[in-house]
Amino acid sequence: MSDEEGLSLEDVGAGADEITPAGRKAGFLPTFLVRALKWVAIGLGFVILGVTTTVVTFNLVNRGRAASELQEISPEYSARPEPLNYDDTMEEIRGVTSDEVPAIFSARISLGYEPREQALAIELAARKREIQNLVLLYLSNRRSSELRPENYRQIQEDLRSQINKVLKEGQIDAVVFRDFVVTQ
Picture 1 (cartoon, helix red, strand yellow):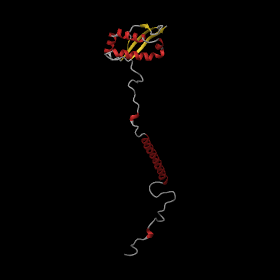
Picture 2 (tube, one colour):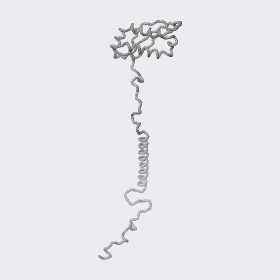
Picture 3 (cartoon, helix red, strand yellow):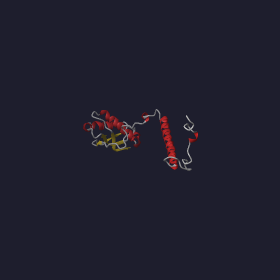
Picture 4 (cartoon, helix red, strand yellow):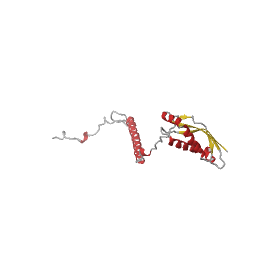
């Protein structure tokens, strides 16, 4: 082998005609485009890092709190309840309270029930007198101080409970006072 055929260290590197001017990169992309792509890649890296950190942190904080902590909506709750049918056939109920000096009360009530319960409507008509007597006895056993407006809701709930105990074809949903007066 001769020296001419061997590897020469002087051949390695760029020649004077291959050197590029300052600010220009040898290749097919201009320098400003390479810099812009570099900054886009850095920004994209920060976005990915931020999203990943947020997801991991959120999962660590909420570990074990899955759907078990969500509050169930009560079946009785409804923002807009369906209207009830009302039995308005009850006559006025008059009586006296259980005070030492009895007060006189007068009440007219309506019984509310679901519209689809037609058998209940028939039973309410059949038990009208029994229900009126039940209401009379309930109100007569109260003092006039217990029959004040601040107690109306409790009285309605008590009456609904008492009436539902005697019904067999369904349950009423509401007792509504059309008139309720207590006088001394």
